[in-house]
Length: 179
Image 1: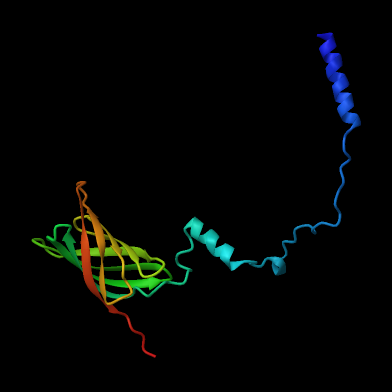
Image 2: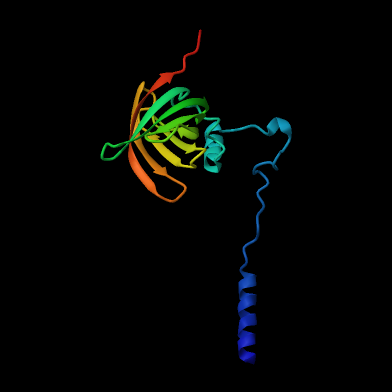
């Protein structure tokens, strides 16, 4: 055991005698300056990327198109049976789209609905629509949302756990601004 301790000590001394000196680079960057005049955004691309990753970037991005206006959407099952008709009034801030309206389901009275979603690159729109009385959720994927005639697909979920998939078609009244 004594020989192992002596061998280890000799090894440490040998390594210490060949140690490389530490050189401090004094010509490198200056210390971090946090004064207000130096706190500027260097790259807006990286800032938008960070906001997108954190979920805070949707409202600030430039929208692909304007989803504001009146929407009439007919819902049908995959085998072309009618499900209902949505009449929505949507508003848009950045890429965020939200609004309210009514849902006429065949055989039931009209229900109040609310909608929330986002526009995406190109001309697609993703909406989550909730009926307030029956507490049903409709997830809409609208593919050509920047045109007057729209189409896409939907998935519906009701509060008792059943689900339904289908296709949607409809029209929209594009909001116009007076110049």
